[in-house]
Image (tube, rainbow over all chains, first blue to last red; front, side):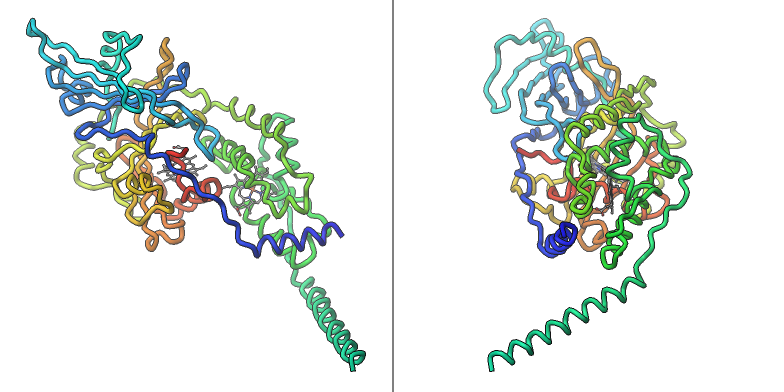
Length: 150
Length: 315
């Protein structure tokens, strides 16, 4: 009896049309800067973050090892997002909300050398100045070799 | 008057039921028989993992289908034999070595996901075979197992190859790589926007996923399914060893994969055209256009409500 019932519900289910709610997209997790190209990306599993480092043409030339010394005009942007499990696939983590965006721009110093201006903003654009070791952040985000893009 | 009306109705009912019974009996002679061919290379798994998959999946994904009496009765038997044939064609635990090692690992991760997303075992099968259901504790056992597979902790220790020798570059310049389904490689994506960055820890790679303007605008407008002209490009690298601060950077470039929406041209694969170009030579993957079936089968099973796309930002 039970099996016959199952067979009948089965037919009913197959006839009915299942309607699944679609996802709600979150464009606010995307960040874009005109005129910048990707230098590299990085994962940090200790901080549970995932980042992209972008650069303008001069920065990309440095990261690609075409230019051996930093030069004024190089611009770097590093976007760091929260890591979250990818919906529908256990086995991948992806970027979630943006935690901070860092900017480093190479300028000519008073002594005639090259230095960097640095700024950090939160995901919603607020300046974040507290507890930043600017020198080490600048060294980190401007010193990475470019990932190979064919 | 009323009384004789009822008898006529009754007679009609008898005729209707009689006919149905007759047809049911008749189609039993055409009922497909389900055969169990010999097992050539059965999968080797830890005992606890094997027990779960044997109970929940082997009926359709192995040459050891145990078919119950009610499964042998037409029209149910048609459905059962369809599911078994289709299930075995996707992957077969009894002929496991037919899959290259990388595919074996990917299949095991896909199985975990198929169970987690409640796509497998098939719902219609579970109704008749409730004992095949996989519990949360059992899913945890499977998850723990896939995390012990070699791809899980793969590190790219090779020196990074940055470019091809000049001779090969010149050859590449002459001929744009073309996939077997006619999709051409292009590096336009370098000017597109990034829609996602991922750590694919199941296979030891990291990725950046780009979308063209049509794709990005559709995301901004929260519009699904994605319109014709939408394009997605995923660039894949190996992963370097983690440094002391926990940072993992890209290793060698592995491949570029893309999806192009054209609902007419790619109607057999849900409107998406797939392509993959391997290595710095960007060698098209797939000897014939049939390779697209493997691509869509996995995307269709697990991400149908996302218009078959995984890498989209969602709340």
